[in-house]
Length: 212
Image 1: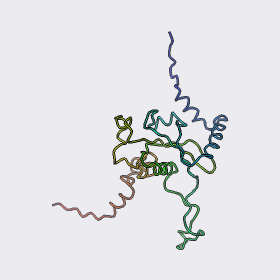
Image 2: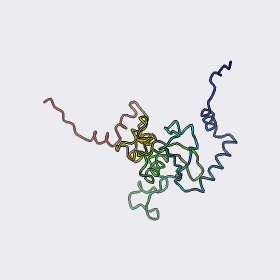
Image 3: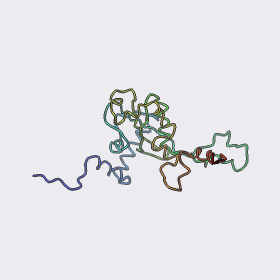
Image 4: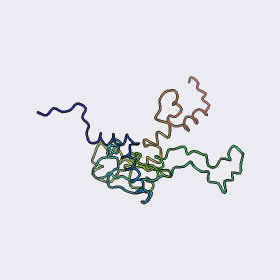
């Protein structure tokens, strides 16, 4: 009789442990080789299978028809102000050109780019896979909303609704909600809901309530 080990790890758990030890010699060598390959390919590239199968499944990927994975390359840098010769014709407070920071993270930028490129697909989620001094690389899990394998699956066919078009452009994916400040809770984050602009607009209104 074979007695199962308590706390025995499955294959995906082993893969997760490998990705957790990012400073090990073997992992650093593997990432360096992969990064070289990624640099030779176009900025948006469809991959046959996810590089991180454990992470892909965590964010919703299934190895079935209708699921697509794209790798996206995004340049790592601050957002440079688009002015000619670095000349901002204004007050000194607005004269910064290079040290400006983009409000959203690079993962949301990667989702946005592949969402525009593949307009017929729906962005489900994404995750980090690699980076070097110049670029960050992400893999985006996408869904074909017209595939019968997707439309007939009650666990994922919510993404086929017309209201789910271009979730990545409206800050509805996981990284988009994080950029909007919706991951926090409590009194420190109550101004982030439903959005910062909506809260500002509501607070600007004069409310003259009276008993009628």
